[in-house]
Image (cartoon, rainbow, N blue to C red):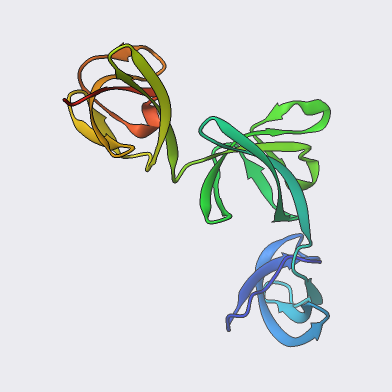
Length: 199
């Protein structure tokens, strides 16, 4: 039995083999075993005494494709073997926050959630920083670049920003649904910002 008691004092919940459900237990003895502990406990419902085996879950490596803006990279991320992962969950890894955008099980079929042991591949998108592409147009010359910022940072048409040591006016914002010449949008909603120089 691996469900069980934590280090707090007093009655705690555990699965009782006699009652066949989770009940309160009284800890009688705690014995260290390897990286875990065996707890001798008595069910407060039926009085049955049992040993509850508590071991830390085994760490396994899970293959992720991590996307930051237009670039992606493969990574092996260590997770606990007994975990479940779900689309939309956010986790911290490599000093960044990532949101799970897809998980595939058997036969590369996308699923909303799966136990780690059944996941064949996973994808995640960086959520604490976004990369917004920019087009800087100066007369007949255009060049591309990118700004890295927080997802909540707002950009407004007509505002002035500094890029590569020059001041530029935001001419238009593109959200993926179309381009607008007025209004304000959060960086997380933007596909591209169009800039014209201030003379």
